[in-house]
Length: 188
Length: 234
Image (tube, rainbow over all chains, first blue to last red; front, side, top):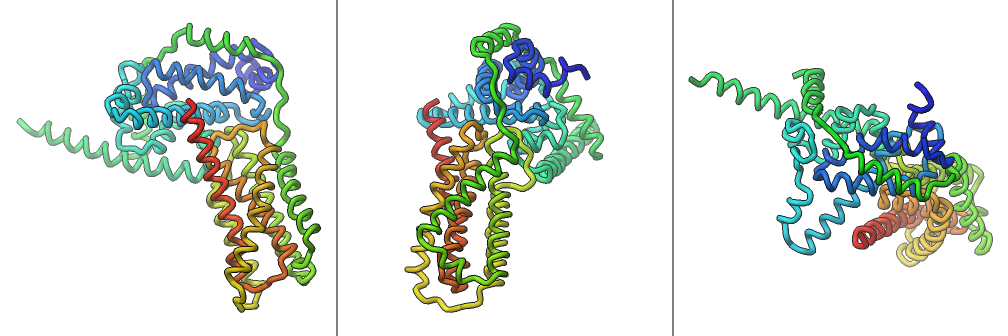
């Protein structure tokens, strides 16, 4: 893989003040990060705000990236932090105003708005937020178990456990829906 | 249903159209360009860990030197070796965990709460093995004095460690606070082992070891408050 495609090398050059490397990093990682936010219950406009906020943080703390270590988990751990911060702020605002409707408008998933597959939302509905996050990182973002563990500041064992639980729930959900589908086909 | 079939369903569901407006990317690039200059990367993790462990050791030894090495003087060689080697290993593990908490996307081999739990259990095991005086004279008065003295040294150790890692960035302030507190607690425990001549098993097992979880809990509370403040400011 060429130097211009290697996130780790680009990060090192970004730390050295190379604007071309910074641009390349922004172009390469932003779509993935944007997708990460749209999948995590944010509307499109919120996802764009979160993406910009993430890049501000990344820029501010770019010295914390350690050369030689995987860059992708570093990006995602900051993105997660921004998302959690945003969630806390949203909860605080909605609690203060006591308007649950506002909360549903600002944080409810908008599948059509975000351009994500409608099926994924429904499919992952029975999962807890941490299980959902792990499944999305693994299956949608295409990250490895190691990378997910690094990004979520947890151990590989803990990630495996979440995946196992998530798959068990998905299996129950899917076998239930297949059963219903089969019954409805049997009806005249 | 097999895992491969589930994978296939997930992949199919995830493949949706996805676009990001070019003006968003331009805005981000513009804001990065405005303040782009070279930065110095953080030193290697081992150097940072060594730094925080040294800070904690300096506080323990410095304070015991001022108040007297009565505990250390009353121990035999086996007790000295076992207690201080174990404390050194646990302090290194806590220091490493704290450094990882301050560097985003760092690999973790053990969770922070498990580290604190295992540290306390390891110290309980060694103290239980070494100290066989089961008297409980002045259990509360002497114990609370030791706990307070330990915490009094844990706080500056944790704060100085935090200061040393101030260039880092804690993505989870509660975990970072818990680890910093536990590390400080080990500095406090080290000071107590060097200074305290009370070798009653109950005293050492309860009040000396309590410094680690209490200090860790205080650190986690501070982290939580910082997180709350940040959310309120936003």
